[in-house]
Image (cartoon, rainbow over the protein chains, first blue to last red):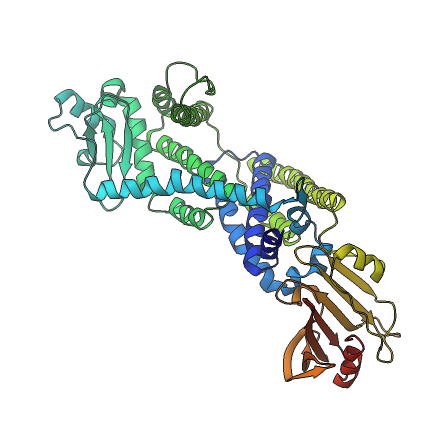
Length: 338
Length: 182
Protein backbone atom coordinates (compact mmCIF):
# COMPACT_ATOMS: atom_id res chain seq x y z
CA UNK A 1 0.00 0.00 0.00
CA UNK A 2 2.76 2.39 0.95
CA UNK A 3 4.49 1.69 -2.40
CA UNK A 4 1.34 2.66 -4.24
CA UNK A 5 1.21 5.96 -2.35
CA UNK A 6 4.81 6.66 -3.25
CA UNK A 7 3.97 6.19 -6.92
CA UNK A 8 0.94 8.45 -6.53
CA UNK A 9 3.09 11.16 -4.94
CA UNK A 10 4.98 11.37 -8.25
CA UNK A 11 1.90 12.92 -9.83
CA UNK A 12 2.14 16.02 -7.66
CA UNK A 13 5.77 16.75 -8.59
CA UNK A 14 6.75 19.06 -11.47
CA UNK A 15 8.41 16.23 -13.41
CA UNK A 16 5.54 13.84 -12.73
CA UNK A 17 3.03 16.37 -14.07
CA UNK A 18 5.31 17.08 -17.05
CA UNK A 19 5.56 13.37 -17.91
CA UNK A 20 1.81 12.79 -17.70
CA UNK A 21 1.00 15.93 -19.66
CA UNK A 22 3.50 15.05 -22.42
CA UNK A 23 1.51 11.86 -23.02
CA UNK A 24 -1.89 13.56 -22.77
CA UNK A 25 -0.90 16.51 -24.96
CA UNK A 26 0.62 14.11 -27.51
CA UNK A 27 -2.76 12.39 -27.76
CA UNK A 28 -4.52 15.77 -28.12
CA UNK A 29 -2.27 17.07 -30.89
CA UNK A 30 -2.09 13.70 -32.69
CA UNK A 31 -5.89 13.52 -32.84
CA UNK A 32 -6.13 17.16 -33.94
CA UNK A 33 -3.52 16.60 -36.66
CA UNK A 34 -5.60 13.71 -38.01
CA UNK A 35 -8.70 15.94 -37.83
CA UNK A 36 -6.87 18.62 -39.87
CA UNK A 37 -5.82 16.06 -42.49
CA UNK A 38 -9.43 14.91 -42.69
CA UNK A 39 -10.99 18.41 -42.65
CA UNK A 40 -8.82 19.80 -45.46
CA UNK A 41 -8.20 16.45 -47.21
CA UNK A 42 -4.46 17.12 -47.08
CA UNK A 43 -2.55 14.84 -49.45
CA UNK A 44 0.77 16.65 -49.69
CA UNK A 45 3.36 14.63 -47.72
CA UNK A 46 5.33 17.80 -46.87
CA UNK A 47 2.22 19.38 -45.38
CA UNK A 48 1.41 16.20 -43.44
CA UNK A 49 4.98 16.05 -42.20
CA UNK A 50 4.70 19.48 -40.59
CA UNK A 51 1.57 18.32 -38.77
CA UNK A 52 3.48 15.24 -37.53
CA UNK A 53 6.38 17.44 -36.41
CA UNK A 54 3.86 19.45 -34.38
CA UNK A 55 2.91 16.20 -32.60
CA UNK A 56 6.55 15.81 -31.57
CA UNK A 57 7.27 19.45 -30.68
CA UNK A 58 4.13 20.79 -28.99
CA UNK A 59 3.80 18.27 -26.12
CA UNK A 60 7.41 18.91 -25.07
CA UNK A 61 7.03 22.69 -25.14
CA UNK A 62 3.45 23.05 -23.89
CA UNK A 63 3.85 22.21 -20.19
CA UNK A 64 6.72 24.62 -19.38
CA UNK A 65 5.05 27.39 -21.42
CA UNK A 66 1.65 26.86 -19.77
CA UNK A 67 3.27 26.81 -16.29
CA UNK A 68 5.13 29.99 -17.10
CA UNK A 69 1.94 31.72 -18.25
CA UNK A 70 -0.09 30.38 -15.35
CA UNK A 71 1.82 29.02 -12.33
CA UNK A 72 -1.56 28.15 -10.73
CA UNK A 73 -2.11 25.46 -13.35
CA UNK A 74 -0.73 22.85 -10.94
CA UNK A 75 -3.11 23.71 -8.13
CA UNK A 76 -6.20 21.68 -7.25
CA UNK A 77 -8.34 24.76 -7.98
CA UNK A 78 -7.25 24.75 -11.61
CA UNK A 79 -7.69 20.98 -11.79
CA UNK A 80 -11.26 21.31 -10.55
CA UNK A 81 -12.12 23.67 -13.41
CA UNK A 82 -10.10 21.83 -16.05
CA UNK A 83 -11.50 19.97 -19.02
CA UNK A 84 -9.65 16.82 -18.02
CA UNK A 85 -7.85 16.17 -14.73
CA UNK A 86 -5.49 13.21 -15.25
CA UNK A 87 -5.39 12.59 -11.48
CA UNK A 88 -9.04 11.55 -11.60
CA UNK A 89 -8.18 8.75 -14.01
CA UNK A 90 -4.69 7.81 -12.90
CA UNK A 91 -5.50 7.67 -9.20
CA UNK A 92 -8.34 5.21 -9.71
CA UNK A 93 -7.79 1.82 -8.13
CA UNK A 94 -8.37 -1.07 -10.49
CA UNK A 95 -9.87 -4.29 -9.09
CA UNK A 96 -7.46 -5.77 -6.54
CA UNK A 97 -6.32 -2.24 -5.52
CA UNK A 98 -3.84 -1.98 -8.40
CA UNK A 99 -3.43 1.74 -9.06
CA UNK A 100 -4.29 2.84 -12.60
CA UNK A 101 -0.75 4.22 -12.72
CA UNK A 102 0.61 0.67 -13.06
CA UNK A 103 -0.84 0.07 -16.57
CA UNK A 104 0.45 3.53 -17.55
CA UNK A 105 3.97 2.63 -16.42
CA UNK A 106 3.72 -0.69 -18.30
CA UNK A 107 2.82 1.17 -21.52
CA UNK A 108 5.66 3.68 -21.00
CA UNK A 109 8.09 0.81 -20.28
CA UNK A 110 7.04 -1.11 -23.40
CA UNK A 111 7.41 2.01 -25.51
CA UNK A 112 10.93 2.54 -24.11
CA UNK A 113 11.90 -1.07 -24.86
CA UNK A 114 10.57 -0.81 -28.44
CA UNK A 115 12.56 2.39 -28.93
CA UNK A 116 15.70 0.75 -27.57
CA UNK A 117 15.42 -2.49 -29.53
CA UNK A 118 13.99 -1.23 -32.82
CA UNK A 119 15.45 2.24 -33.15
CA UNK A 120 18.44 3.00 -30.93
CA UNK A 121 20.35 -0.30 -31.04
CA UNK A 122 20.05 -0.68 -34.88
CA UNK A 123 21.30 2.92 -35.35
CA UNK A 124 24.29 2.30 -33.08
CA UNK A 125 25.02 -1.10 -34.70
CA UNK A 126 24.91 0.45 -38.18
CA UNK A 127 27.18 3.28 -37.09
CA UNK A 128 29.70 0.83 -35.62
CA UNK A 129 29.56 -1.36 -38.74
CA UNK A 130 30.11 1.76 -40.88
CA UNK A 131 33.07 2.81 -38.72
CA UNK A 132 34.58 -0.66 -39.07
CA UNK A 133 34.15 -0.37 -42.83
CA UNK A 134 31.77 -3.34 -43.02
CA UNK A 135 29.45 -3.20 -46.03
CA UNK A 136 27.89 -5.33 -48.75
CA UNK A 137 30.58 -6.14 -51.37
CA UNK A 138 30.54 -3.98 -54.50
CA UNK A 139 30.73 -5.20 -58.09
CA UNK A 140 34.35 -4.53 -59.09
CA UNK A 141 34.04 -4.79 -62.87
CA UNK A 142 30.65 -3.76 -64.20
CA UNK A 143 29.58 -5.03 -67.63
CA UNK A 144 29.13 -2.48 -70.39
CA UNK A 145 25.34 -2.97 -70.69
CA UNK A 146 24.72 -2.25 -67.01
CA UNK A 147 27.07 0.71 -67.06
CA UNK A 148 25.25 2.20 -70.04
CA UNK A 149 21.91 1.58 -68.35
CA UNK A 150 23.04 3.58 -65.32
CA UNK A 151 24.31 6.44 -67.48
CA UNK A 152 21.08 6.64 -69.48
CA UNK A 153 18.98 6.53 -66.32
CA UNK A 154 21.04 9.31 -64.78
CA UNK A 155 20.75 11.63 -67.78
CA UNK A 156 18.88 14.76 -66.80
CA UNK A 157 19.14 14.02 -63.09
CA UNK A 158 22.17 16.25 -62.41
CA UNK A 159 24.12 13.46 -60.74
CA UNK A 160 27.37 12.04 -62.12
CA UNK A 161 28.09 8.36 -62.81
CA UNK A 162 30.66 8.32 -59.98
CA UNK A 163 27.83 8.92 -57.47
CA UNK A 164 26.42 5.44 -58.13
CA UNK A 165 27.92 2.21 -56.79
CA UNK A 166 26.67 -1.28 -57.71
CA UNK A 167 26.20 -3.85 -54.95
CA UNK A 168 27.01 -7.48 -55.64
CA UNK A 169 23.50 -8.65 -54.72
CA UNK A 170 20.82 -10.37 -56.82
CA UNK A 171 17.95 -8.96 -54.74
CA UNK A 172 16.29 -5.60 -55.43
CA UNK A 173 18.26 -3.22 -53.21
CA UNK A 174 18.50 0.56 -53.41
CA UNK A 175 19.65 3.07 -50.82
CA UNK A 176 21.85 6.11 -50.52
CA UNK A 177 24.36 7.57 -48.11
CA UNK A 178 24.16 11.26 -47.30
CA UNK A 179 26.89 13.64 -46.15
CA UNK A 180 29.66 15.44 -48.03
CA UNK A 181 30.01 12.75 -50.74
CA UNK A 182 26.61 11.14 -51.14
CA UNK A 183 26.48 7.81 -52.95
CA UNK A 184 23.52 5.90 -54.41
CA UNK A 185 23.87 2.13 -53.93
CA UNK A 186 21.96 -0.05 -56.38
CA UNK A 187 22.09 -3.83 -56.54
CA UNK A 188 23.10 -5.81 -59.63
CA UNK A 189 19.73 -7.56 -59.37
CA UNK A 190 17.89 -4.25 -59.65
CA UNK A 191 20.01 -3.20 -62.64
CA UNK A 192 19.02 -6.41 -64.37
CA UNK A 193 15.27 -6.32 -63.63
CA UNK A 194 14.54 -2.58 -63.97
CA UNK A 195 14.31 -0.83 -67.34
CA UNK A 196 15.77 2.65 -67.90
CA UNK A 197 12.61 4.55 -66.84
CA UNK A 198 12.22 2.48 -63.68
CA UNK A 199 15.86 3.06 -62.79
CA UNK A 200 15.52 6.79 -63.49
CA UNK A 201 12.57 6.98 -61.10
CA UNK A 202 14.44 4.99 -58.45
CA UNK A 203 17.59 7.14 -58.77
CA UNK A 204 15.51 10.33 -58.67
CA UNK A 205 13.89 9.08 -55.44
CA UNK A 206 17.32 8.56 -53.86
CA UNK A 207 18.53 11.97 -55.10
CA UNK A 208 15.47 13.41 -53.36
CA UNK A 209 16.57 11.73 -50.12
CA UNK A 210 20.06 13.18 -50.51
CA UNK A 211 18.79 16.71 -51.28
CA UNK A 212 16.16 16.63 -48.53
CA UNK A 213 18.75 15.47 -46.00
CA UNK A 214 20.20 18.99 -46.26
CA UNK A 215 16.96 20.18 -44.62
CA UNK A 216 17.27 17.84 -41.66
CA UNK A 217 13.63 17.77 -40.56
CA UNK A 218 13.83 14.02 -39.90
CA UNK A 219 16.99 14.41 -37.82
CA UNK A 220 15.30 17.12 -35.72
CA UNK A 221 12.26 14.86 -35.34
CA UNK A 222 14.50 11.93 -34.39
CA UNK A 223 16.12 13.98 -31.62
CA UNK A 224 12.67 14.92 -30.24
CA UNK A 225 11.55 11.31 -30.56
CA UNK A 226 14.68 10.19 -28.65
CA UNK A 227 13.93 12.68 -25.87
CA UNK A 228 10.40 11.23 -25.69
CA UNK A 229 11.57 7.58 -25.84
CA UNK A 230 8.84 6.59 -23.35
CA UNK A 231 6.00 8.15 -25.34
CA UNK A 232 4.02 5.63 -27.47
CA UNK A 233 2.35 8.46 -29.43
CA UNK A 234 5.78 9.83 -30.43
CA UNK A 235 6.79 6.31 -31.52
CA UNK A 236 3.83 6.03 -33.90
CA UNK A 237 4.07 9.62 -35.16
CA UNK A 238 7.79 9.39 -35.90
CA UNK A 239 7.19 6.28 -38.01
CA UNK A 240 4.41 8.03 -39.90
CA UNK A 241 6.71 11.01 -40.40
CA UNK A 242 9.34 8.70 -41.91
CA UNK A 243 6.70 7.17 -44.19
CA UNK A 244 5.64 10.66 -45.32
CA UNK A 245 9.32 11.31 -46.11
CA UNK A 246 9.22 8.45 -48.62
CA UNK A 247 6.14 9.98 -50.24
CA UNK A 248 7.73 13.44 -50.24
CA UNK A 249 10.75 11.95 -52.03
CA UNK A 250 8.40 10.29 -54.54
CA UNK A 251 6.92 13.72 -55.31
CA UNK A 252 10.39 15.22 -55.63
CA UNK A 253 11.40 12.38 -57.96
CA UNK A 254 8.32 12.89 -60.14
CA UNK A 255 9.07 16.63 -60.33
CA UNK A 256 12.52 15.68 -61.72
CA UNK A 257 11.47 12.93 -64.14
CA UNK A 258 7.87 13.89 -64.92
CA UNK A 259 7.05 10.14 -64.99
CA UNK A 260 4.87 9.12 -62.02
CA UNK A 261 3.76 5.87 -63.69
CA UNK A 262 7.35 4.67 -64.15
CA UNK A 263 8.11 5.29 -60.46
CA UNK A 264 4.85 3.55 -59.46
CA UNK A 265 5.88 0.52 -61.52
CA UNK A 266 9.36 0.55 -59.98
CA UNK A 267 7.79 0.55 -56.51
CA UNK A 268 5.36 -2.16 -57.51
CA UNK A 269 8.28 -4.40 -58.50
CA UNK A 270 9.69 -4.08 -54.98
CA UNK A 271 6.53 -5.69 -53.60
CA UNK A 272 6.31 -9.47 -53.25
CA UNK A 273 4.45 -11.12 -56.16
CA UNK A 274 1.62 -12.64 -54.11
CA UNK A 275 -1.06 -10.55 -52.45
CA UNK A 276 0.03 -9.95 -48.91
CA UNK A 277 -2.21 -10.96 -46.02
CA UNK A 278 -1.73 -10.03 -42.39
CA UNK A 279 0.52 -12.69 -40.81
CA UNK A 280 -1.14 -15.25 -38.58
CA UNK A 281 0.51 -17.18 -35.78
CA UNK A 282 0.10 -20.69 -37.12
CA UNK A 283 2.80 -22.23 -35.00
CA UNK A 284 5.58 -20.07 -36.44
CA UNK A 285 8.37 -18.94 -34.17
CA UNK A 286 8.06 -15.43 -32.69
CA UNK A 287 11.01 -14.25 -34.76
CA UNK A 288 9.38 -15.43 -38.00
CA UNK A 289 6.15 -13.69 -37.08
CA UNK A 290 8.05 -10.47 -36.27
CA UNK A 291 9.79 -10.57 -39.67
CA UNK A 292 6.48 -11.35 -41.39
CA UNK A 293 4.86 -8.40 -39.60
CA UNK A 294 7.69 -6.10 -40.66
CA UNK A 295 7.40 -7.30 -44.27
CA UNK A 296 3.66 -6.83 -44.15
CA UNK A 297 4.04 -3.27 -42.80
CA UNK A 298 6.66 -2.52 -45.46
CA UNK A 299 4.37 -3.88 -48.18
CA UNK A 300 1.47 -1.73 -46.95
CA UNK A 301 3.69 1.34 -47.29
CA UNK A 302 4.86 0.36 -50.79
CA UNK A 303 1.26 -0.30 -51.80
CA UNK A 304 0.09 3.10 -50.56
CA UNK A 305 3.02 4.84 -52.33
CA UNK A 306 2.22 3.03 -55.56
CA UNK A 307 -1.49 3.86 -55.37
CA UNK A 308 -0.74 7.47 -54.57
CA UNK A 309 1.57 7.85 -57.57
CA UNK A 310 -1.03 6.32 -59.88
CA UNK A 311 -3.65 8.81 -58.67
CA UNK A 312 -1.28 11.75 -58.17
CA UNK A 313 -3.09 15.04 -57.59
CA UNK A 314 -1.98 18.18 -55.77
CA UNK A 315 -3.56 20.00 -52.82
CA UNK A 316 -5.13 23.36 -53.41
CA UNK A 317 -3.30 26.28 -51.76
CA UNK A 318 -4.12 26.28 -48.05
CA UNK A 319 -1.55 28.90 -46.92
CA UNK A 320 -0.74 27.01 -43.73
CA UNK A 321 -4.27 27.50 -42.37
CA UNK A 322 -4.61 23.82 -41.26
CA UNK A 323 -1.39 24.09 -39.25
CA UNK A 324 -2.42 27.35 -37.62
CA UNK A 325 -5.87 25.94 -36.82
CA UNK A 326 -4.35 22.76 -35.36
CA UNK A 327 -1.98 24.83 -33.22
CA UNK A 328 -4.80 27.08 -32.01
CA UNK A 329 -7.11 24.14 -31.19
CA UNK A 330 -4.24 22.42 -29.38
CA UNK A 331 -3.38 25.51 -27.33
CA UNK A 332 -6.99 25.94 -26.20
CA UNK A 333 -7.70 22.27 -25.42
CA UNK A 334 -4.31 21.26 -23.99
CA UNK A 335 -4.25 24.23 -21.59
CA UNK A 336 -7.25 22.71 -19.83
CA UNK A 337 -5.93 19.13 -19.95
CA UNK A 338 -3.83 18.68 -16.80
CA UNK B 1 -11.64 30.63 -60.02
CA UNK B 2 -8.87 28.66 -58.32
CA UNK B 3 -8.62 31.25 -55.51
CA UNK B 4 -12.40 31.05 -55.02
CA UNK B 5 -12.20 27.24 -54.78
CA UNK B 6 -9.31 27.57 -52.39
CA UNK B 7 -11.25 29.96 -50.15
CA UNK B 8 -14.26 27.67 -50.12
CA UNK B 9 -12.11 24.67 -49.21
CA UNK B 10 -10.42 26.60 -46.41
CA UNK B 11 -13.74 27.75 -44.99
CA UNK B 12 -15.26 24.29 -45.25
CA UNK B 13 -12.15 22.87 -43.57
CA UNK B 14 -12.33 25.48 -40.78
CA UNK B 15 -15.96 24.61 -40.03
CA UNK B 16 -15.19 20.87 -40.05
CA UNK B 17 -12.08 21.36 -37.94
CA UNK B 18 -14.04 23.42 -35.38
CA UNK B 19 -16.63 20.64 -35.11
CA UNK B 20 -13.96 17.94 -34.78
CA UNK B 21 -12.02 19.97 -32.17
CA UNK B 22 -15.25 20.41 -30.19
CA UNK B 23 -15.77 16.62 -30.35
CA UNK B 24 -12.21 16.06 -29.04
CA UNK B 25 -12.83 18.52 -26.18
CA UNK B 26 -16.16 16.85 -25.41
CA UNK B 27 -14.48 13.43 -25.36
CA UNK B 28 -11.97 14.64 -22.76
CA UNK B 29 -14.78 16.24 -20.75
CA UNK B 30 -16.74 12.98 -20.89
CA UNK B 31 -13.74 10.94 -19.75
CA UNK B 32 -13.19 13.41 -16.91
CA UNK B 33 -16.80 13.04 -15.79
CA UNK B 34 -16.67 9.26 -16.10
CA UNK B 35 -13.49 8.92 -13.99
CA UNK B 36 -14.94 11.20 -11.32
CA UNK B 37 -18.13 9.10 -11.29
CA UNK B 38 -16.24 5.83 -10.83
CA UNK B 39 -14.21 6.85 -7.75
CA UNK B 40 -13.96 10.21 -6.02
CA UNK B 41 -10.35 10.19 -4.91
CA UNK B 42 -8.96 13.24 -6.69
CA UNK B 43 -9.67 16.85 -5.70
CA UNK B 44 -13.32 17.82 -5.25
CA UNK B 45 -15.57 20.24 -3.39
CA UNK B 46 -17.15 19.22 -0.10
CA UNK B 47 -20.33 20.61 1.43
CA UNK B 48 -19.22 20.28 5.06
CA UNK B 49 -16.13 19.64 7.15
CA UNK B 50 -17.65 16.42 8.47
CA UNK B 51 -18.18 15.08 4.95
CA UNK B 52 -14.60 15.97 4.03
CA UNK B 53 -13.26 14.35 7.21
CA UNK B 54 -15.07 11.10 6.38
CA UNK B 55 -14.00 10.97 2.72
CA UNK B 56 -10.40 12.13 2.75
CA UNK B 57 -8.81 9.88 5.35
CA UNK B 58 -6.68 12.50 7.09
CA UNK B 59 -5.58 11.35 10.55
CA UNK B 60 -6.99 14.55 12.02
CA UNK B 61 -8.75 17.66 10.74
CA UNK B 62 -8.31 20.63 13.04
CA UNK B 63 -10.72 23.55 13.06
CA UNK B 64 -9.83 26.78 14.90
CA UNK B 65 -11.78 27.55 18.03
CA UNK B 66 -10.86 31.23 17.69
CA UNK B 67 -11.55 33.35 14.60
CA UNK B 68 -10.32 36.90 14.12
CA UNK B 69 -13.10 39.44 13.97
CA UNK B 70 -14.71 39.88 10.56
CA UNK B 71 -14.09 36.36 9.23
CA UNK B 72 -17.25 34.65 7.97
CA UNK B 73 -18.23 31.13 9.02
CA UNK B 74 -18.70 28.54 7.42
CA UNK B 75 -15.79 28.27 4.97
CA UNK B 76 -16.52 29.76 1.55
CA UNK B 77 -14.69 26.87 -0.09
CA UNK B 78 -13.87 23.39 1.12
CA UNK B 79 -11.74 21.38 -1.28
CA UNK B 80 -10.16 18.06 -0.44
CA UNK B 81 -8.56 15.02 -2.00
CA UNK B 82 -7.79 11.48 -0.93
CA UNK B 83 -5.05 10.99 -3.53
CA UNK B 84 -2.23 11.59 -4.50
CA UNK B 85 -2.08 12.46 -0.79
CA UNK B 86 -4.87 13.22 1.69
CA UNK B 87 -5.41 16.97 1.91
CA UNK B 88 -8.05 19.52 2.85
CA UNK B 89 -8.05 23.22 1.99
CA UNK B 90 -10.51 25.56 3.76
CA UNK B 91 -11.00 29.12 2.58
CA UNK B 92 -12.76 31.84 4.58
CA UNK B 93 -13.93 35.22 3.41
CA UNK B 94 -14.56 38.44 5.33
CA UNK B 95 -18.15 39.01 6.46
CA UNK B 96 -18.66 42.04 4.23
CA UNK B 97 -16.36 41.21 1.32
CA UNK B 98 -15.70 38.61 -1.34
CA UNK B 99 -11.93 38.43 -0.88
CA UNK B 100 -10.33 35.38 0.70
CA UNK B 101 -9.08 36.41 4.14
CA UNK B 102 -7.99 33.09 5.63
CA UNK B 103 -6.75 29.78 4.21
CA UNK B 104 -6.22 26.66 6.30
CA UNK B 105 -4.52 23.71 4.59
CA UNK B 106 -3.95 20.33 6.21
CA UNK B 107 -2.26 17.47 4.39
CA UNK B 108 -0.25 14.33 4.99
CA UNK B 109 2.27 13.52 2.24
CA UNK B 110 3.19 15.91 -0.54
CA UNK B 111 6.10 18.28 -0.09
CA UNK B 112 4.33 21.64 0.07
CA UNK B 113 0.85 23.05 0.45
CA UNK B 114 1.36 25.31 -2.59
CA UNK B 115 -0.82 23.22 -4.91
CA UNK B 116 -3.63 23.43 -2.34
CA UNK B 117 -3.60 27.23 -1.94
CA UNK B 118 -5.31 29.71 -4.20
CA UNK B 119 -3.13 32.38 -2.56
CA UNK B 120 0.33 31.86 -1.13
CA UNK B 121 3.16 33.74 0.54
CA UNK B 122 5.32 35.11 -2.26
CA UNK B 123 7.71 37.35 -0.30
CA UNK B 124 8.94 36.52 3.21
CA UNK B 125 9.98 39.64 5.14
CA UNK B 126 10.34 38.05 8.56
CA UNK B 127 10.59 34.46 9.78
CA UNK B 128 10.50 33.13 13.36
CA UNK B 129 10.57 29.62 14.81
CA UNK B 130 9.14 29.07 18.27
CA UNK B 131 6.79 26.74 20.15
CA UNK B 132 3.07 26.89 20.97
CA UNK B 133 1.96 24.41 23.65
CA UNK B 134 5.25 22.49 23.11
CA UNK B 135 4.53 22.31 19.35
CA UNK B 136 7.36 23.76 17.19
CA UNK B 137 5.90 26.23 14.67
CA UNK B 138 7.22 28.50 11.93
CA UNK B 139 5.79 31.99 11.58
CA UNK B 140 6.42 33.92 8.38
CA UNK B 141 5.37 37.48 7.67
CA UNK B 142 5.45 39.01 4.21
CA UNK B 143 3.37 39.57 1.09
CA UNK B 144 0.99 37.26 -0.68
CA UNK B 145 0.69 36.52 -4.40
CA UNK B 146 -2.24 38.97 -4.45
CA UNK B 147 0.16 41.73 -3.38
CA UNK B 148 -1.49 42.18 0.03
CA UNK B 149 0.43 41.88 3.32
CA UNK B 150 -0.13 38.50 4.95
CA UNK B 151 1.32 36.10 7.49
CA UNK B 152 1.62 32.34 7.57
CA UNK B 153 2.00 29.75 10.33
CA UNK B 154 3.21 26.23 9.65
CA UNK B 155 3.56 23.16 11.85
CA UNK B 156 3.52 19.35 11.57
CA UNK B 157 1.66 17.21 14.10
CA UNK B 158 1.02 13.45 13.96
CA UNK B 159 2.16 13.28 10.34
CA UNK B 160 -0.24 16.02 9.25
CA UNK B 161 1.17 19.32 7.98
CA UNK B 162 -0.82 22.42 8.88
CA UNK B 163 -0.48 25.72 7.02
CA UNK B 164 -2.55 28.74 8.01
CA UNK B 165 -2.39 31.86 5.83
CA UNK B 166 -4.03 35.03 7.08
CA UNK B 167 -4.45 38.40 5.35
CA UNK B 168 -4.06 40.38 8.52
CA UNK B 169 -1.90 41.02 11.57
CA UNK B 170 0.45 38.22 12.71
CA UNK B 171 -0.84 38.54 16.26
CA UNK B 172 -4.31 37.40 15.19
CA UNK B 173 -2.79 34.52 13.25
CA UNK B 174 -0.89 33.36 16.35
CA UNK B 175 -4.08 33.39 18.42
CA UNK B 176 -5.96 31.49 15.70
CA UNK B 177 -3.18 28.87 15.42
CA UNK B 178 -3.03 28.49 19.20
CA UNK B 179 -6.71 27.56 19.13
CA UNK B 180 -5.96 24.76 16.66
CA UNK B 181 -3.11 23.18 18.65
CA UNK B 182 -4.20 21.02 21.55
